[in-house]
Amino acid sequence: MRPDPGLTGRPGPPGPARTTSPRPEELDDERRALWSLIADGPRRAQAQVPLVDADGRLLGPFGLMLLSPRIGTAVQSVGAALRFDEDLPARLRELAVLSVAAAVRSEFEWAAHEAAALEAGAEPAQLQDLLAGRLPAGLSPAEQVGLQVVQALLARHTLDDPLFERASGVLGTPGLAALVWLVGYYEMLATALATFRPGPAAG
Image 1 (cartoon, rainbow, N blue to C red):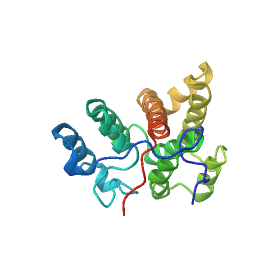
Image 2 (spheres, rainbow, N blue to C red):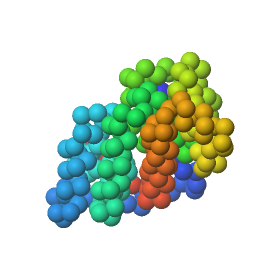
Image 3 (spheres, helix red, strand yellow):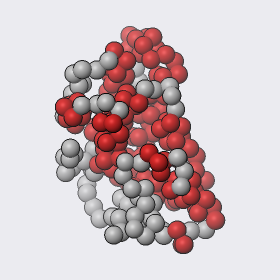
Image 4 (tube, rainbow, N blue to C red):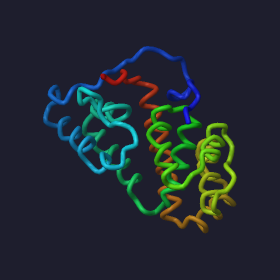
């Protein structure tokens, strides 16, 4: 499923690339350590899209983490924790990521997680609903309340008391916390992509 051509980052005026990720041989020791953490770490086995281009440059938000390597290292650690943590079931996690990607119009995030959502059991029609901003049919109770949480956080950056109580009961406090962090994390990545506009991959 191809996302809308406008799904390229947060809404705003398009423009040319502002940054280019360096090649591995151009990195200092601190950035090289971060490069290895991303390119050779646990993400490599599960990545649905390439993490590096033909020249070894980190792609998408990962290349942007090299701009400030100390912060970038912390950011990638948060992403890895969310990606591999067990507080959220895999299908709910991937549907939540795609909900954020569709809402903030991030093509990279959609491309990076579409196949993972399908592998976790999501249906193509459910993904199409997310692209259209609709709550998909055929969700489990946990998925339904989880995506309601995502929609509320994206729209209002908080939950009203009834939804908070329902989500806490269905997802548990650790699951709800993971979902809140997940929404903020992928919104942050989309903001970075739209701000720094990384250049296209080589090769």
